[in-house]
Length: 339
Image (cartoon, rainbow, N blue to C red; front, side, top):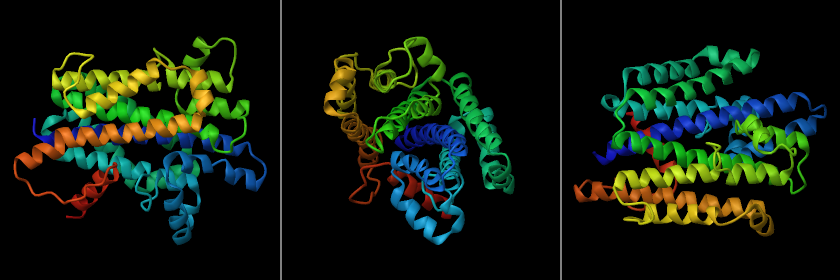
C-alpha cells in the first residue's frame, strides 16, 4: 500500500472519531450549563473542555477577534478559527477521503460529504442557536453510521487496518482527556460531574452494569482506564491498537518489529499490570499526562515507520523538522484545500 494512502486513511478515521467525541463532550456540557444559575459558574463549566482539548490559547485569541467565538460551545463546534473544531475535523476528514476516493465505498463518501455540506451550511449555524441537540445528534449519528459502513462495505485489508489505527489511538486520547476534566479544579468532583464524564464518554449504561455499588471518583477512573470489555476504555483501545499494528506488520503478538509496536506494547503492559491504587498514588492527572506523551510518541512512530520513511526511500522531497504531533497533518490538509 502507498504510504500516502495509509496516511490519509489513518487521518480520515482519526478526525471522524475526534469529531464524535467533541460532539458528545459539548452536548453534555451544554446541558449541564443550563442548570447553572450564576454567570461565573456558567462560564467556568466550559473551561474543562478547553483544558481537555488543549485549546485554551487558541480560544483566547479567537474570542478577542470574533464575538461568536466567545461562546466556547460554538468555538469547539463550528468556529473556522479553531483548528480543531468539529467543523474543521469533518472538513479535514473529507479532504483525506477525497485523496483516497478509490479506497472507500460509495456509501462512506455519501455520508461524509453530506455531513460536511451540512456543517458548512447556514442550517448548522441555525441549529446551533435554535436546536443544538439536533446538531449534535446528527454529528454523533454520522460517526456511528460511518464506522459501521467502514466495517461492512470495504475490504478488511491493510487500508482498513490503518483506519482502525486512527480510530483507536484517537479514542484512547479522547477518553483519557475526558477523564482528565475531573482533575481541572483540583477538588473532589461532585456526583453530577462524574455522571457528566460518563455520559460524555458514552459509558453511563456500561458503567452501571459493572459497578452496581454506585458512582464514585475511583470507580469512574477505574472503569474508563482499566475496563476489559468497554470499547472506549483506555485498556480496551490500547489492546486493539496493539493487535492492529501486529496485523499490519505480520509479527506475532508479544514481539515487535518497529518502534510503534514496542511503544504500544509497553503502554499496554503498563496498564495491564497496574491498578487504580497505583494511579491514585501517582496522581490521576500525572498518570494521564504520561499516557498522553506515550500516545504522541506512538503516533509519531506510526508516521515515521509507515509514512515518512517510505517517502524518503522513494526520494520524495520532505521538509526538515517535521512536527511531532497531529498539527502537521492539519497544516498539510489546509494547504491542499487552498490549492
